[in-house]
Image 1 (cartoon, rainbow over the protein chains, first blue to last red):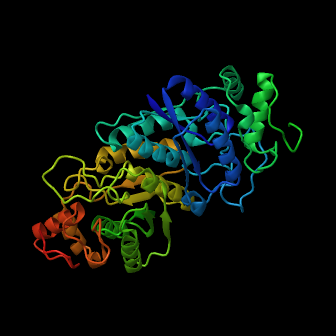
Image 2: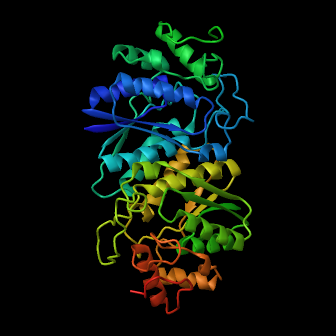
Image 3: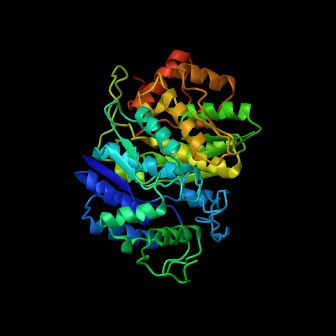
Length: 224
Length: 224
């Protein structure tokens, strides 16, 4: 069974890659740059993880329209990347409108052409920033779109193996599967040393703290 | 009510634009190039139609991944654009895997940012090439994805006003609304004179014949 893994190069997608590699006979890896601030660093992390798993089928693509459209601190330099407030129930400025639908569309087109039957994506609902396109019902709805929007003989399902996990559980699962967490990149705003204060860093650091292990990457600021 | 119209520059999207302009207080127009053979000519048609309707909000974007992924005669020069066989029930080589999901994703992100509540798309089921992503159930499923994959306060619905129409009915509706059919481009393979023999030309010519009016654009070959 050939599976495609959508991987940003972050921790969730790294552990998702480890799970996909464990469950599939072959994995192909897909990375999409969309004009986010840290795209070079993410791509480096993506390639490091793909090398680690010996993946030869890779698709790295870049989409301009999410940056053209804007509306997010990740793609629009005029909108500040806010300090994390993990207690807030508001959707943070880092929300890229409907981003995961773009990623899944690309993965589905590629899957239909290369004959992959699974698309793995490391979306996380609970212990996350509250993005609407990270919830299970989004993936259920998208599976239906794939079912009716591809050729009759095409069979592709989205798999979200970490969606209900807490960050600390993802870390533990990754350690158990020997996933290369040291190669991952999560920070939303820096490319040399992780900032430690954006939403993504804050979630990651809290996860390591709760897992009782130390994060193998280094930070510009002390852990919050 | 602000509406986005997805427009290739073809006849179906031109008439859809006419309908959207009739039903909305303002329209914004979106065109996506995806490495298809006739993208320059399509973009010219798109801009002609947008000028005709005095549309100031336009987003023209280009995606590389559908051409990278291939699998279609529209994006891969190694796959021939086949002569039309309108009696066939096979999906033709011009099928671009899952293409309309990409277009809708872009439209949805843009709609969420600019506050549009309707996305018009000129998909046609019956009198078409049988692409799976042109059927009503695809759009119903995608509406559900939008509902669960965007912010709670976001309200966006896809509108497919010509989906059940025959080509001849689309032409008649267009004439009734004074749509600029002379500015449209449908041919899959030529950019100077329409070939008259590809699927898209054949469907268009049959539509005009059935509508009992003559096509205002010119063809390289006599009508089949």
